Image 1 (cartoon, rainbow, N blue to C red):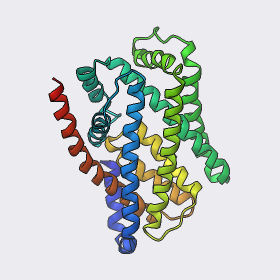
Image 2: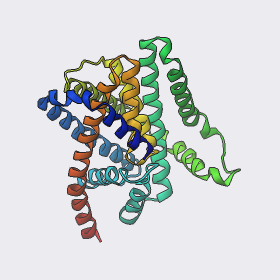
Image 3: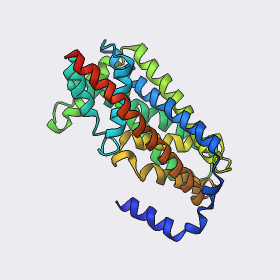
Image 4: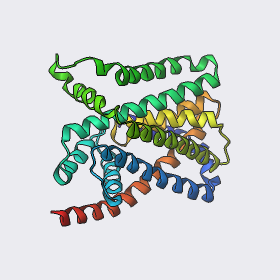
Length: 293
């Protein structure tokens, strides 16, 4: 609510600067929509890769339907709150242990954070400049934390403390998953592709307002918004992703007002396709699930 209030106040006091809206390119909006749909497919494919490790062999309507229902639920639930719902569905219809799925998703999130923070660090090194020192240190800490857990934690037991039981489950599950090179390689390649797609979507979003942005700047925005979206501390990551776009736009000299237009466009298009695809494929998912019963 605080972020929403700040955004509303900005719009009221800078309404004369919203002229970029009249310059929007519909062809770029169409391209952006296509990219968002492909990204939706990729997010579902990530679920397919994870569940294939457990030999669930989900159909397209199942893994894509679950992914879209999850995206819709996360618009309203913080801290990736839809994950337990996916786990309960897979337990009910595919006999997958809830703890295993939640832990596997935790491992996947760590991989995503490690990859994207690594990309962000490389881009910041390319950028250079003192303005990025604090950002580099922050992202570096996230990167090292993710790597520490992925590569060193399997050698330690966390059973000493009850409140670390969730982390212990992730550690145990990661010990099994990391032995599956096919799953790990597939997740890494898929998320590298997702990074490139998100990078391209940022470039197209700026281009829709006749604004040019470098590949490196777009990549930095893509990395940071992916990390914040993975954590999903606020329902739908609302306000956090937009704040990151505005911050990077300001740091890179693009302009906060320009970044605001791009952030709003991305939010609108992603929301539209989430609301459009989720009911369609969720209904098909429920129909097949009922038939399976």
